[in-house]
Length: 581
Image (cartoon, rainbow, N blue to C red):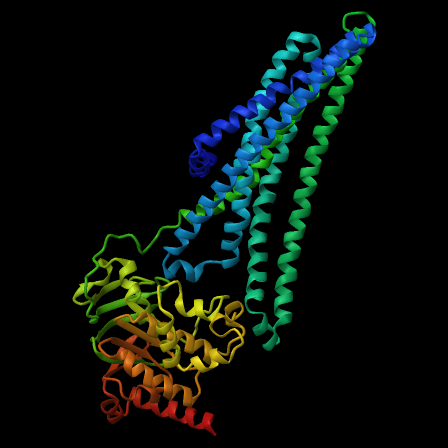
């Protein structure tokens, strides 16, 4: 029952391609039927051609044999081609389904997800499913057809000899069942160890320079050796049990062969059977045993697919907290007024990050959020972007709860510039354009406003320069400038700056601040900053402490109160003074 639940979506994908299945099935059947003909030709050669020295019949038999071989292999080639098409389409569909589903997950899911395990699911697990959806499942169908045809043919040829050949086969199925149980548990552990191993390697490869600069190689290798050794040990166990399973099958096959030759040889000696029939019967038996062995091993092989499908379905069954295609509203014009009404939120349903928050971010206004690390500032902006939804209360956009907006429309109208800028391993031009339909004049103007144009023009390939994995060829300040240029190009009505200039020097910051003044016109602007000197001109400043709004007002008003904001500002000023010395 468990297998049915996990495999139903896969079977839906596999059997979606009916035309390819029909063609592959026809040629697979032709291949199976033609395989019956070659042993029959052996009978004719041994019993008729050789004793009678009939050269004409020999020529006819040879021509027939060659024709059968060509047709059989040609049919197999065409069948394999169509099954390869089906397999690749299934993999494409399944990976696309996984990526689309992951793209719809909320921040709650991503905060707990293991990237290495997800990578293993999308790559290795889906590849395992491809093997099942082509080679395994359709080989099984072919083997069943071949086995049935061979049994009928052998029963007609020598029924008593057939009974001898199948006498030991129940023993093989009993042994395979025991191996299957052991292999399933090993495959499950191996898959989990592989996910951990990939996670460790992926973490290192994405941050090699950081590991080197922080002298953290020992930490990496300690984690690597531990995960790699566990993966290696389980892999050895799996290979041992697979080999032992095959060995038992080979031994049983040997006993069956010697039984046929012994009893068949006795029948030849007493004249109850010809040599040609014995040779052909033994050949037919091998053609029968091979499919039966593969059928017996099928359940063992399917264990890996079951584990892979469990992992795939675990991702696909993960509930989507925030629906993307929610049919929400998409106003022609978005003013950008944002209000928080008694908002409570927690990341883990235990400790509240925001408590009874009330905020107002008006359009054509620059608002700032200040507070110590962990006070909840970035959480506020994440809730506006709907990476999470509030636990209690409401967030209104132009007087309408943001949950009533179409999610794509909502996020399209919010531009975020963060201190953690992600740079694609691509050209500077593509990192600025981000697949949007923008003219080169617009891109150049944004690069100039973000104070990154001169740097780009100093590069040999200019805008076509590659920046490396996660922008490894760029400094922190250059990455931030690219992020700022992106925000200028996006021209969204709501702009969130989360430590947007933290990596810039004083001169660059002054240039960018001038660009921001033009960018801010008519927009709803929310600034999060530790360097509080950058928000002195904000229209309103909110001080957040332990998830609550404790102060609000202009810079002048809050400084006059000499409370939370005053202490944060004076502390920031002291740090800036020390850095400038």
